[in-house]
Length: 310
Image 1 (cartoon, rainbow, N blue to C red):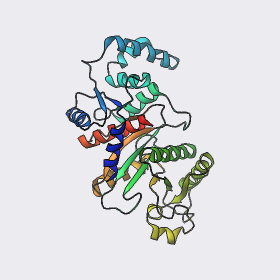
Image 2 (image 1 turned 30 degrees about the vertical axis):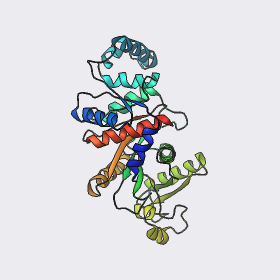
Image 3 (image 1 turned 60 degrees about the vertical axis):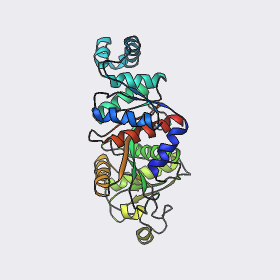
Image 4 (image 1 turned 180 degrees about the horizontal axis):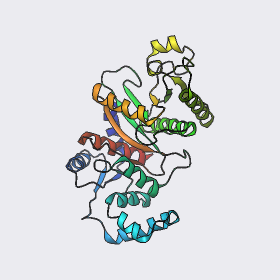
């Protein structure tokens, strides 16, 4: 049984309700049918035509109260709620649904901004970021070809503190959703001092902070990609590394490297990519690439359902 099959099986165990606020998109409609047919989640499809106006008015008032300190007026809130995305986020906040998935039509910035404003940041992590579950076929590396990549969608140039929090939240996601022991590698163009520079210093500082946050976490850095995932290379470059070239959670030093890497892995290695899964919020939600396929929407909904179970 591969990773995606395991995710689907686990989603079915405790049925959750997921909102899809992009019902105008054919891919989303098709995905909703598959999710319902396979019993992965209960689906609430949303567009401008099927929104409860009384509930919408309640959410507008609530959103205004949340954001007025930032200068949002009631009229601003009414304009914002012309987009069903905000309605789905407030439904999640209020517990009418267990999570939402969007991004087939909206940009990542739109989805993440809405989620942050409506759901709030989890104080456990203090940073909102994202990760991908990557399943690479016929691959012996990682967790039998399964990896978590972070951050590939939100923070362009994370500080050491943000990078540490990204690592901790991605590791927690891997442990809780995939039920694996996370082995975390902070990636760089250097392995254990083979090069010098400010970017390397940032990764080293992030490693120290992450170890302070979760001392029991199996984590190491700075590591080049081959030293992180290939045991034979790790034995040469970093024989004392606690992860021994068996990393299954890869933390990229910046959004540029993370986003490029996940797309190359997806296209060149024909990997399945689930995400971006937005992590660090009080309630679960997932973003989508606007180039996503139906299967990606289905898989994101299944993972979001599992996160709601947790």
